[in-house]
Length: 549
Image 1 (tube, one colour):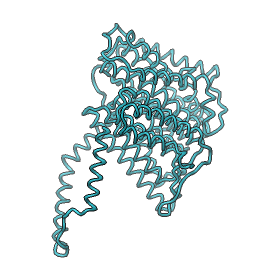
Image 2: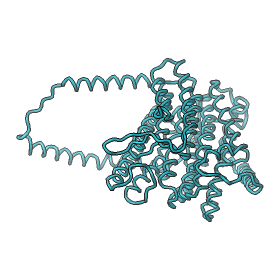
Image 3: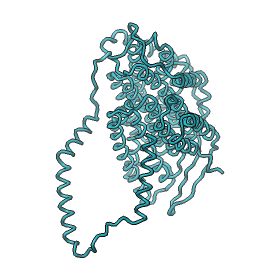
Image 4: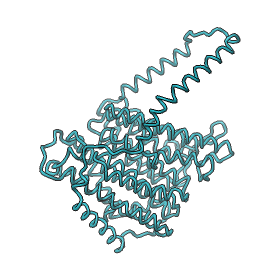
C-alpha cells in the first residue's frame, strides 16, 4: 500500500471529483484533499521509494528525503489555503485545476527519475494554464496562451536535456548535473519556471489576469517547484548566485514602478525567488536550508498578500492604484491581515520572512560574497517600499471612499486569517520551520544586531517613502518589460519569416508528392471503426473539459 502514500494521489482524486461534482461535494473535496495530502507529506519517512521500470528505465514516482518533504508539506498547505480562499463561489475550473497543479508540484518534488519529473513538469504547465483562464476575460485567455507557449518551450528544453543526458549514458535517477550540453538545457528549463529574467515575463503577464483565488494558487507552485529542482540538481553553481541577485533587484525595481496591485505583487515573486536562486547557487548547507526555508515562508506570506489584493479586486472591481484609495474604513480586517504579509515579506522581526530570508543572507556573508550580500539587503529596501508602504497607502489610505459594492465571503477572510497566523507562528517559533529543513540548523535569527539592522531598514525606508510618496503614486499606465521584445519577435516571425517558410514548405510538399505519387497506392479515407472510437472518446473528453470550465 506504499504507492497510496504519495501526497499527489488525494489531490488528483480531488481534482477529478471537483471537475464534475455538485457544489457541496466540490467544496468538501477541495478542503479534504489538501488535508489528506498534508498528512501524507508530513509522514513521509526519509529513504521512502516507490517505483518500477519502463523500457529499461527506472520510474521512481516517490523518493522522499528532507529536502523533498519540506516542499511537499508546503505545497499541500498552499493547496488548502488557496482552496479555502476560493471556496466561494467554488468554480469547477478553479478547484479542479488548482488541485491538479498541486498534485503535479508534489509529483515534481517527489520524483526520483527524470522521466517522472518531466511528466509532472508538463502536467503542472497545463494545470496552470487552466488556472490563468479562470480570469474569464479576453486578456486572461491571451495571457494563458502566452503562458502555455513559454512553458512548452521550457518543457521542450527539459525533454531535450533529459534525452541528451540519458543518451550519453547518464544516470536516469535525478541527481546533480554538470553544466555541459545537457546540463545547460536542463538549467534553462528550470530557469524558465523560476522566472529568471529575461525569462520571467510570462509570470507578471499571466498571474494578475487570473481570478483572485487563481492568482493565489498560481503563486505557489511553478516557481517554487523550479527552486526545488535547482537545489536538487544545480546546488553550488556560481552562475545562480548572480542570477538570483539580479532577480531580487530586477523584481523590486519593476514593483516600485507598477500601478496594478496584483502585478506589483507578481514582480515581488520574481524578486523573492531571487533569494532562493542565490541560495541554491551558494550551495552550502546553510544556503540550501535558507532557500528551502524561504520558499516555504514565501508561499505562505505571498498567498496572504495576494489574498489581500484579491479581496480588494473582489470588493471594488478595481485593481489599479490610481483608481483606489480610502478603503481602510470599509476593509479594516483586510488591511490588517495584508500588513502581516507585507511585514513578513519585508523581513520584520517576529514574522516568518525574518527567520527565512536571513538564512540566505547569512550564507552569503559566511562565504564572503559581500557584493551579493549587500545587493540582496538593498532589495529588502525596495520590497518594503513597494509592498509595505506604497500599495497599502494608495489602496487603503486617503479620504474614505464609497463603500465597496461586494462584501467579502467568509472563506476569504478565514483563509487570510489562517495564513497570517502561520506567518506569526513561524516568526515567533522558527524552530518549527528549522526542524523541517534538510540540514541541522545552528543559526540564531534573533540576535540584537540582526533585529536592529532590520528595524533600521524598515524605519529608513518609511522615512524615504514619506518624502517621496507623491512621486510613487503613478499614472494609469503599464510599464514596459521584456515581453515587448517577445511580441515584436513574434510579429516579425508572423509577418515576415513565417510566410516565406510556408512557401518553402508548400514547394517541398508538392515536390515530394510529384516524386512518389506513382509508387503510392490510392488513399483510402474511409473512417474505420477503431478511428471512430478514438474520435468519440476525444469528443467525450472535450465535453467533460468544457463542462468543468
